[in-house]
Image (cartoon, rainbow, N blue to C red; front, side, top):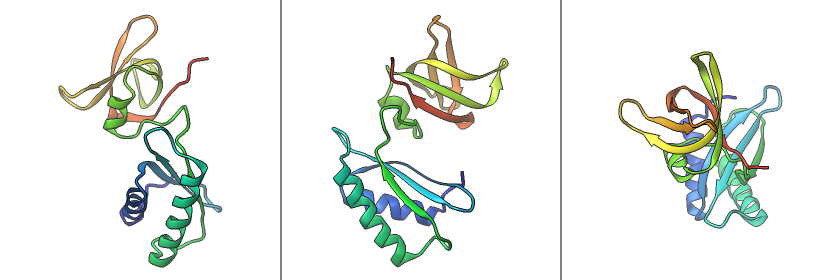
Length: 154
């Protein structure tokens, strides 16, 4: 996964906001066949029409402004039920839901944490508060989270 150029992020944010939608996350993945993935949302969820509209508007804007100097595929989608947690506001918004967090560095030999997302702690560094099923709580620095998402219970 490649970090997005700030110009590309600004264009995506501008287009999604203009359409009354929230930009959840955007990323470029892939090597020889790059994929620009854009996840959007709105209260009540996004529809196929929302994704189509943003895809068309974003494709046109990216073609005109041309911030990506190579061929890529654009994909616009809903974040899904197991949506990723990317921003501080995500950790607050989805507090009370089960989640999975993978750390970039092990904490006491553990990199994967499953449990209830309780929110954020801003005491020292911004950290997610996770409570495992056995009641053990962890403060996980957002800066060291490699990937996090809510989990749908079976």
